[in-house]
Image 1 (cartoon, rainbow, N blue to C red):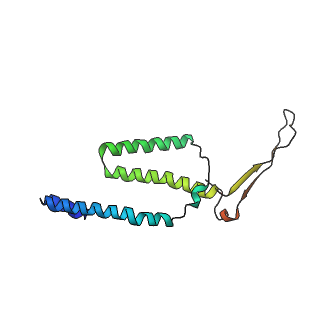
Image 2 (cartoon, rainbow, N blue to C red):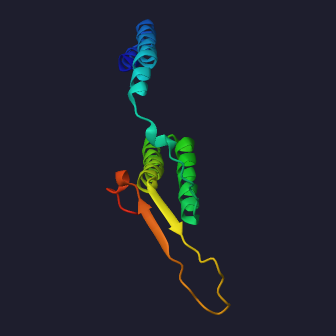
Image 3 (cartoon, one colour):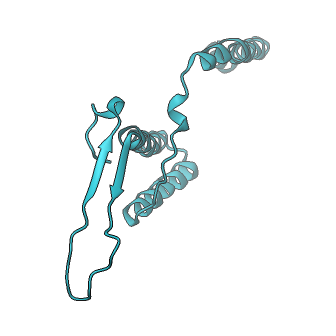
Length: 143
């Protein structure tokens, strides 16, 4: 309907273009009020409850700086290709965060330190252990 509205406006039929644009807007509003809440209720959100602290590295700062430069260039020029590249860059950030949350959510890491301290000059290695919950064993330990 929105495409029809644009075609009618280019053809000079302004009343028809306005009516079809209002109909398209009404249809989009109906979908937003009736169908989207039903789909949102059926979506499982249990995976959002995991709390993982993310640290921003130097490489991450460079990547986000590049994303900001592409976003400013896309907004400044209005080039659709830059907007598609920006969408891919932001999707990469989102997928990286979600996959690292999924992979590292069931892992537990421990570090067993001896109760007594060693004299200076001697090196020692502290035993550490990493375990995973049974549910998350299908994913490798990488982030």
